[in-house]
Length: 398
Length: 134
Image (cartoon, rainbow over all chains, first blue to last red):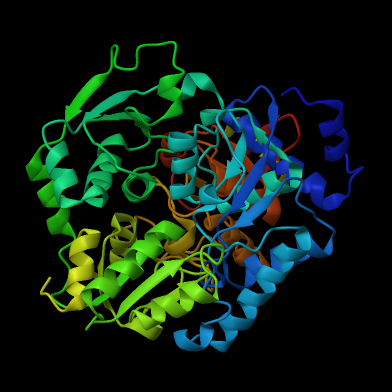
């Protein structure tokens, strides 16, 4: 692989052992991926933050890196951790998890990360079309590639950590234009209107991910009215599929700038209503449950919409838990959510916190991604549209 | 018998050869406290990977698996060396930070023919990777 003189210097340890290790990891991954060279990245986002997931050894390793002087070379943000830093008292957090998580966050802070603790860096990061990024967290990767047109592979947390330190990613996979063309057309035309009418973008995303697998699909026939629906759709596609890019007709910048015909010579898969129904039945959960919204984290506008909906329709009779990012809320929003009868958490989410410790085992959500991962953790989950989930919180039957 | 592959993480390791015909999820599929494969339905379920020369097609599941290899190493329960058909991110990152010798490009189907429980020596240098099986 070709390395610049600067990259060689880093690899040889002239900028410290930690950065040399990071560069070594990036180079070895690049070699196996067949990259001809590395590419400088503009921004990094690291998952694998929760102590619940990475445990004592992950913590020890990250502390060792920070202690050896590792520093992020580019603006770097963090995925959610195991609890709300200001509201952990309401989450019945284990003392071991409490101290482990705080040490992980502190080590990241010393390395220079912005303590965002959110899975929606695309709402805040300064990124645009064509930028090379090193992002982990599948929903963020999918949004950055598919909606912004930035370029990142679907990296794992540990790799993104090293790329952030090295300031480089292997020039391979979705960093290269030739790998960003669709291999498959997923056509929602015959069900598109019904999806919009019923607001079941999550179910559509789960279906799209299952069909796409690890390949880049082109999605046609769905009309998105805003980024909130896209966010739910892409997050769900990322849960059932391994792809890091879903080209969405009339949304994805790659299609706008394409010099090729996106549908030429690719296989078409039409989505039928029965397939969407099967997907919803797969997540039909228990009859009762706590309503959890905010996977991916609610944007400021989504949060505002939910609060004003509650104000208009009355206080929830069932528990309603909202997850969002600390960047989205100030004291005023927190108070407004509480007054409207919802519980609000930042810095964490339903998937990476210990939900059973503070909210039981049965849930209702509008997120296909949450439904998928909570089911895999043994919870009973019912997937509804956001409108239905909110009505259910008010007292309707599910 | 001698097999050659592509070098990824340098080092020399010796141990009993353990061949997995299917991918391994290190996070969730291997108990970090014992080094035993725990995934239900997995062909290696109940077997320990500690101290073995572990051969597999590739990994799957969460990328936290890289840290699981480190957890195993910290407790002396990691494989002595790993031989993978396909190199993937979880293995490369995990083996570098855990200092586990890693070679890729050796087909599992070839190693399955050799049979279980043989002694093996893995030698990975910056330019070559060789696996000797007794």
